[in-house]
Image 1 (cartoon, rainbow, N blue to C red):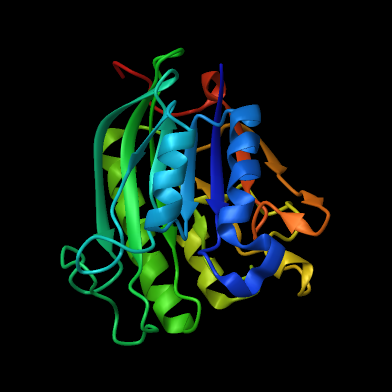
Image 2: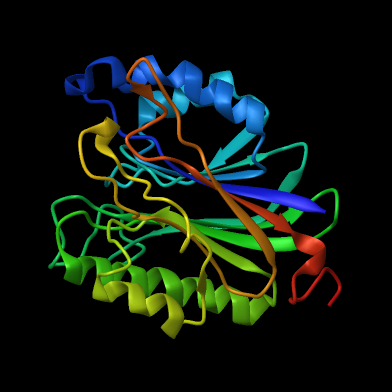
Length: 260
C-alpha cells in the first residue's frame, strides 16, 4: 500500500520576491497539493498568514505544531496530514536548544532565529500501518547550531524508533549540503538519506546555483521512491525550494507493524 510524505519549505512572505511573493504563490501551492494528495506534509517557514490560508483552502488536512516564538506564533515546522487517509495518535513539538520545552529558546551558537521541531505518531487508515514523522528546519547561519540541532532531532527520532518499533521518517530543510560535516550525523544515528540522489532543491527562485539542502530520512529499510516538484511558470515557482515527496510501499518495510 502506497503512502506519501512531502517536505516543503514555503518561504516566508517577503515583498522583495516580486511575482514570487508568498500570497501570490499560495493558490498554485494549494492546487498542487490537491493534485498530488500527499498523506503527510512537513512544512518549513509556515507563518501565521499562510497557515490561515492553507487551513481554509485545504480543509481535508489537519495541521499540528506551534510557532517558534515565545508566544507560539511566527514561523513553524508544522505537520499536516490528510484526515481521509491518516489519523494521529500522539504529537508534540520542542525547540532546538538546551531547554527544548522553553518557547523561543535557542542555542548560544545559533542565529537570532529560534528553531523548532514537530513530531507525530500516525496511522495509515488504509493499511493500518503505524509510523512517525519528525519535521524541522535547522539554523541558516552557524554550522555548530546545525550540528547541535540535528543531533537533538535525530536523538528524538531514534528514541521514538526504539521505544515504539514503528518506522520513523525525518523531514526538513537542514540548511546544509551533503558536503558539510553535519551530514555525517545521519549515518551515525542509523538513518538513511532517501534524498541522496535527488536534484538540488534550493534555487532562490532561480537566482542562485541550486543546492540540495532539503531532506527526507528513513530509520528503517523499505521500498521507497523520491520525486521532486520542480515548477516554473512565467518566472513563478512553488517556492524558493523545490518540495520533495517520498512514496513508500509500507507493506515492504522491515519494521514493526500494528500489533507487533
